[in-house]
Length: 76
Image (tube, rainbow, N blue to C red; front, side, top):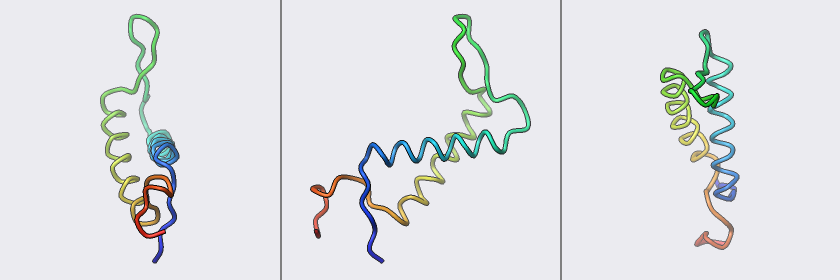
């Protein structure tokens, strides 16, 4: 099967958005914590879940797409 090539920027954005969606949709507890300056970040548990989901999404993307620009592909 020939794979579609998508830019690295789109690849990273898709991986991040899909992993974030997974974490938010599967959450039971609060995902966010606020630091002393008021900045929000994932809790440790949510961050671990995001990292795991990101790895899984990467594997899924690799089965359908090539990462990089057209000019980076060898067999065009």
